[in-house]
Length: 141
Image 1 (tube, rainbow, N blue to C red):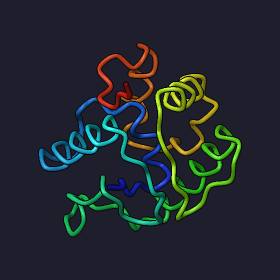
Image 2: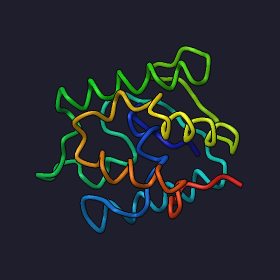
Image 3: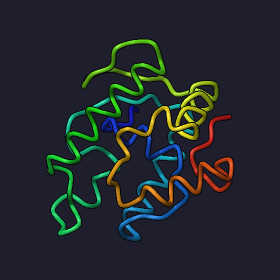
């Protein structure tokens, strides 16, 4: 199978530690973390993705806000630069340990944080990165 992710979730997954909007959101994200660890590839999409699924149709759903679309564009640009290839909706990524480490290093250094400005999770993600991603649930063997 393939995991459908919007671009800014490529950054969010780096620091995911089991916190989220609701128990259903967390359970879904945990399942996605397991699928990534098992080697499923990523398909970049515009708009709501597999992580957003539990929020769609709820009052917590912010998937269609202009600020989230802008966050996606900034994340797409940052990750494209890191990977050295253009990415867009429809691009596929095979996440491996080397790529995860590269992305985490860029995130921790601030090189790939442009999309994170004004995000409600900014402080949490900064703290996770500052302690070397201890407790982060996305792990690639």
